[in-house]
Structure formats: C-alpha cells, structure tokens
Length: 226
Image 1 (cartoon, rainbow, N blue to C red):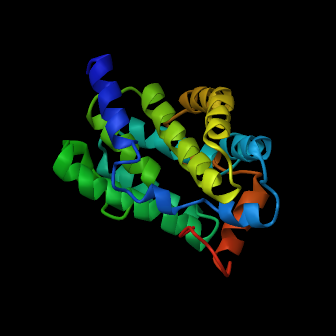
Image 2: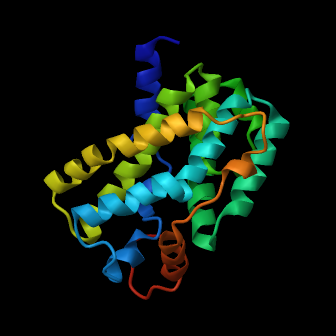
C-alpha cells in the first residue's frame, strides 16, 4: 500500500460523508453542556483530552490496536467485539459504538471490500471494524489509529459547535490543540503488547463523561441520539 493510497482510504472511511451516522452522537457531551461543564473552547479541549488519556477513547485505542494486530483472525475479532460491547459503561455508549461499527461494516463490504471484513461480526464496535478494514488494506497502525482518533475528535468538536455553541474558528483551534493528545494516545497504544489480554490495558478515570452518557439517556430535550 502506497502512502497516498492509504491516506486516500482513511480520508474516505473517516470522512463525515461515510454513512455511519456519527453526526447523530455526542458521546454524552450534550448533557455535559446542559450542566455547564463544557461551555467554551478550553473546557471542550480539556474534556476531550481526558477522554483520550483516561477515558472511553483510550479504550477505543486499545481495542483498535488489538483488532489491527489480529490479522483477520475471526476468533480474536469476535472476542474483541464481545469485550467492546460488554465494556460499554452505559446503554447509550454501547448503542453509539455498535451502531456506527455495524453501519461501517455494511457499507464497507460493498464499497471497499477486503477479505478481513468477513471475519468481523455483523454487530461490532466501531474501532474494531475500522482497524480490521485498515489492516486488511495493508495500512499501518499509526496512520490508521491517528485517522480514527481525529475523526472522533472532529465529530465531537462539530457537536460542540452546535451545542455550546462554538464558532468555526474556535472549532478548528480546538482540533489543533488536541493534536498532541491524539499523537500521545497513538504512541501509547502502539507500544501495547498485542499478545496480552486487551482487558488488562483498558479502564479509565473519566467518570464525569461516563455519568454524562448515563444522564443523557433521560435528558428531556436533546439534539443527539447519545
């Protein structure tokens, strides 16, 4: 796989135009905004930094790394899919991961087919199927995971622009400010021992984000599905 070919694929798969429904999810951010926890650009950057370093996004990075290393091994990918579903801290987090992952597989098997996708269950968390797709196309871990994390960050910045609200310039400043955190998460994940149990590397301390996801389930007025 050439660098240009890998870049083109990642830009296509993790573009807002790829029909996985990412725009309908706020990852609990909607409730955090309502509570006043996130009300400006700096608070948003701090919130997302915590998710990358010690929250749900770090767990996504662990799952992504192990799925990428699985090399199309169906047993490993199914086990990772079960772990991802069971580890979701709330119903909405599980819905968010599985809805996007299942949609990604459905569109990818027809538009970007690769044998590795046959080893992925139809109901699967987003990071696992994106990683399997990237590995199947010969794309290395670091650029694939960087693109995945950038897509996550950009989607929540877009949500914040509607919720806080933030202007377009502040949105881009937030994405730029989060670049070091994304890079650090990629390097930390790339150093994982993929022969070890992925559960040992998972966990988090971003409890406010988990609580926000739980509270969002009963939020009376909302724009987002999660």
